[in-house]
Length: 136
Image (cartoon, rainbow, N blue to C red):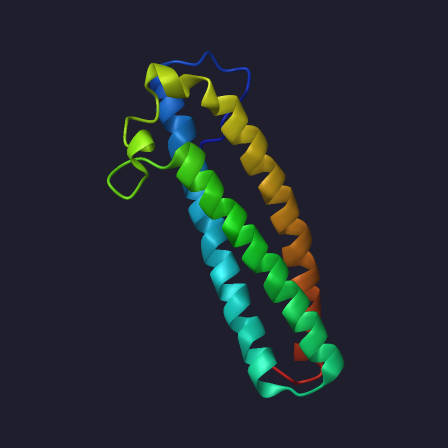
């Protein structure tokens, strides 16, 4: 997806919908990465008895689980549309009531992206270390 929202844009229904689709895409992408990393960490937890490996894997797994919960809440409370959403959110994302959410969505999503990058970097470093020892 080549589109990137800009806070300088004039908020019209069209830009609102583009922003909305962009943030939905970003959240979906992060959810998939979280799922993949958690699967690798589960493999580590299931195959290695080393206390330090278990401890690190559990820590990263918990951090990723907390991020997933935050992404779920963000999606449900600010971005979600359609039948899978709570009744109060089943309206169009860019109706007048939602226009003001665009900046809030960007702020929350950007903060979660930063947190995810930090956790992901540490997790990948941990998994890379295991690969360099031929443990994965």
